[in-house]
Structure formats: C-alpha cells, structure tokens
Image (cartoon, rainbow, N blue to C red; front, side, top):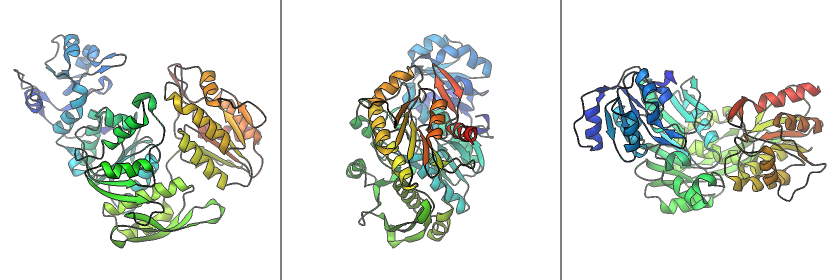
Amino acid sequence: MSELHPMEPFTRTLAGVARFLGVEGEFPEIQCTGVTQDSREIAPGDLFIALPGAKGHGAQYIDQIMAAGARAVLTDAAGQALVAEKLPTIVVSRPDLIAGDVASWLYNSPFSSLGAVGITGTNGKTTTATLLNQLWQAAGRMSGFIGTIGISIGDDEFPAEFTTPQATSLHRIAATMRERHVKNLVMEVSSHAIAQKRIAGAKFNYVAFTNLTQDHLDYHGSMENYFAAKAALFTPEYANVALINIDDPYGSALCEMTSIEVQTVSRSNRSAHWHYDRIEELPLGKGYEVAIRGVGGILIEGKLPLVGEHNLDNALLAVALAASTEVDPMVIAAELENLRAPAGRLEPVQVGQKFIALVDFAHTPDAVERALATARTLTTGKVIAVLGCGGDRDPGKRLPMGDALVAGSDVAVFTSDNPRSEEPDEIIRQMLGSHTVGENLIVDADRRGAIAIAVAEAAPGDCVIVLGKGHERGQEIAGVKHPFDDRKELARAIEALS
C-alpha cells in the first residue's frame, strides 16, 4: 500500500505523543512522520505501535522495523521487554484500544474533512457502498471507497486485506484521500473492526445499517453480542446521523437504542423517512421501475437495473445516503438506470453458453437464501447451485447454509470454500446434516470439480450459480492461499464442455 501514504509528511514528536496520551515521563523530541501497527508497512520516520497477537507480539520484529527506519515504539509491558531499549518506547496497558486515536491525531483528524459515510450490517454493505460511490461519481465528486472488494480514490484502485483496515492504516488512507481532495468517503464497517476499536478516531457524518443475520458467531459468541458490536457504531463517538433499515427487526431495535438522529428506511413501510412509493418488476430479469419517496417529500423515479429484492433494499439505502449527502435528486434519478452491482455480487459469466451462469459472494444462511431466490426469478429451468463453508469460521452457520442450499436449488452441489486449517470433508459433513447424497444432491470437496459438475448438469434455460467467494481470487487450504477465482473457473468449465 505504498501509494496510500500522504505525499506531505505529518510531523509529531514522541514527547508530543506521550503528552497526547497522558503518559508521564521524560521522552525525547524525536520527530515521527507516520504511524503503523504493521511491521511490513514501516516507512522511514514511523512510530511503530507494537501489539500482542494470536501468534506472537509485534515487538518481536524490533530489528526488522529498525532496519526499515522506525523512530520509536508505542507498546505494552510485554512489548517493552522485547524492544529492550533498542528504540525509545512509550508504554501503555492497551495500545490496541488507542492506536486509532493516535493515528487520527498524528494525521490531523483526516475524517473531519471527508464527509464520511460508514455502512454496517451482515449483508449488503459492499453493494450499498458501491452504489453510493457511483452516485457520488455521477454528481462529479471526487470520492473514496474502502471495503471488501478493495480501496479506491477516484479512478485509482488498491487491494484491501480487510473489509475495514487496521486502525493506523485507516487514518493513513484517509489522510491520503484528504490530500487528493476527496469530498466524500464511503466505507464498510465490520463488526470485528468496531469491537476491536479499529475505527477509533474516525467520525462519520452518516452511518447506515443494512440488516443482521447469523454470521461471525465464532468471534462474537451470540447474536446479542454481534448486535451490540454493530450498535456501538450508532453513537455520538462515531456518528452524527443514522439511516437504519427498519424492515429488519434488529434495525427497529437499533432505532430505539441510539441517541443520534435517525432517518428510517423501509421497502414497504410508508411511514419511514425513505421508502418505495412504487416497485414494478421489469420483464426478462432486467430489474425494476421504481419511485422512491424521501425526506421533505423528495420523489426519485427511474429504472433500477439490479435483480433481487435484497438489491431493492441496497439501492434504497444508497439513494437515501446520496440525497442526504446533498447529491441532486435529479442526478440520482438520471443515474439509477446506470447503476451496477459490485464484482462478485450476482455477477454474470457469459462465454456463449445457453444457460445463465452467476457468481455470488453469499456466505451466510440469509444471503444464500436471497441469492437462490433471485436466481429462481431469472429462469424457468433448473437452479443448480454450488456452495461451501469456510474453515476456522462460525461453524454454527454451516447447517443452516446447507439447508438453504437444498431448499433453494433443484440441484445442490456441496463443496469446499477456504477450508483453512480444517478438513473439507468434515465441514461438508456439518453442512449436510441429515441430507443425503442423491441425484439432486452432489458432493465434491474439490471446488474446481464441483463447478464442473454443476456446469455438466445444466441444460439450455437453466441457471448455474456458484456461491460463497464472489470477487475473491484465492482458496486457502492448510495455511496456503492458492490462486482461485470462481468467475474464471466457471468460464473454463463452460468452455470445456462447448
């Protein structure tokens, strides 16, 4: 991410950092021009925040970060012992909780000038953020995007390691965006990032809630904890105004909990601040003709070329956010028909075949159900679906995902998806539950082979949909990430049979 560093350095002294944190003691006036918590991203002049981790401590890389040009370290007592006075060090009890605040201070509060929007929820974050970014661009604005599919500043695109970057990276990226005159930033905010204080120091003009369904319970432990993590974004610490989908029961509960201003969003509830006056399905799966009613009586009408009821929710929230950030409703109306879903979200693969082929990121029970329901509306033939579940992730969602696969498809192909350290066959066994292999239920732990099987099952007019990985370009097996892109594999399987 070397391109995501501000050109003009920000200078703070180590003594100034200590004063900012209220740490007593004598510290040298060493100049720090950046800050990072990733030893791989050290730039000369950086303050390195050394954090404890699952597999070790960041301070164990002290020689590496010194060689890269780090000037000082902020860490805990365990890290101090590893640094062993090789660099000047500030010690605090929980450096992970204040890394974002330090980065925001060092980079002069970049979020304060970005007109930032944060979007959270289980499903729909990426699509909503992408649509909003498209509406800003249609209005001629320089905009920024941070999310699952990558980072962008205007037309420049960069890869992303996490849905929401680490705290120090987040503020460095935001400072780079400010330097490049970004007017609005939209970012996906994950529950992990909120719980881990990765967004500390960030302040959003608007935050939005899409929905909450089962996911990440391996980390949060329960739906109550998962919801509490999401709800923490909707506080004065992080946001000024909330736009909340009240069709979701957790959204309705969130409206009652939050102390910040709320605008409600609903597909069908006409008492909501933002809702549809009219939804008419267009023929041949070409989307919808819609009329959206908003705050102050705003009426936005046009054709929406996205399929699936979940995309009606995503588009409504994106339109509400665009209008709230002062995009002219006439511009929004004109741009509706040009909106496009992000990579890997019901993305078509077309290499001349006579059936529909789609790739989708669906990796929760609710998302699988919605994706298959949408696939059903696109064909009068069979829906043939391929799905796996990730290893080392919430095992409680495996059986519900398998149930959704069987219920929503005519031919269900169970396979592997990033098994990581687990055995693929065991993950599939948990997905299957009491379902048994048969003519319409197929198991192949080799994902490439499973995709080929699905394609071989397809007849003209059918729909093959490969679920779970979407835009991803790797398959992680036993700690090794192998190149793997569902879109390319699906295209190759089709071409092999033609």
